[in-house]
Image (cartoon, rainbow, N blue to C red; front, top):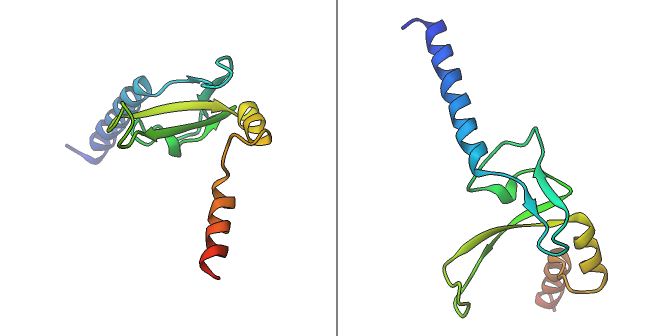
Amino acid sequence: MNYEEYKSCLKNIEEYELNMKSQLVGSYVCISCQEKEISPLKFSKIDPLGQEHMSWDNGVVFLVSCGYGSRYDLDSFYMGICDNCIEKLDRIGILKNYREIANSQKELLSK
């Protein structure tokens, strides 16, 4: 096999992998409003087992891993929530901001 044939084969493999991954990753409907669609951005690298690290349009996709005590213990789920619902839930105090918790912990530990 010469170099050009090798490059052609490699390109075919990459296209096949992308096609297979694209079948595993799709859009999500917002878990809060159940209306808005969260879709992967065109330039985002498709990673079926790392969707929380991909770029999404209109919101975010996150991984929820259920721990001991939940009837879904040891299960994990991908979910999406739209930007509008994140803003609304944050404004009414339902969400807990990670940075605020980290900063508060840092302050407590420094005393």
